[in-house]
Image 1 (cartoon, rainbow, N blue to C red):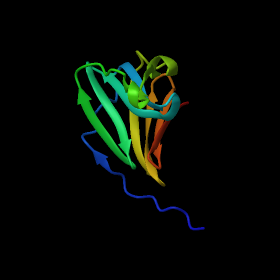
Image 2 (cartoon, helix red, strand yellow):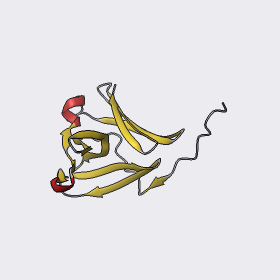
Image 3 (cartoon, rainbow, N blue to C red):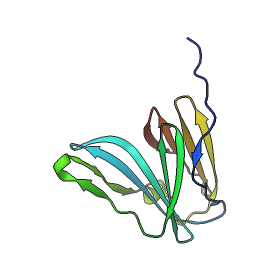
Length: 137
């Protein structure tokens, strides 16, 4: 079997310049359908210098958006789905920690973003076959 060719990186929106800034918040939005976790990291919200940055993926394309207000969890209970939030910053131990930088990389069947924090922690957000997951290292 031939190895999967890695497509060029596609970015929609302007990647923010966050290197050297302190992480004031990091929220993971997941997708739950009929009580079952379907997508562990549907979107990641990062708070730096008073601005929320939304990171999400669609078929390997990396999307960046900004907003002023804190993101809110939401659901449509009669349809059986929702987008709950969790405090990934606290879970990973990076709230209040300086971000050294991040890299965006293409990969077979998707792309990923790797955040590197001054305390040695890394958060990897990876989208493969349009399913986004995360890992704290």
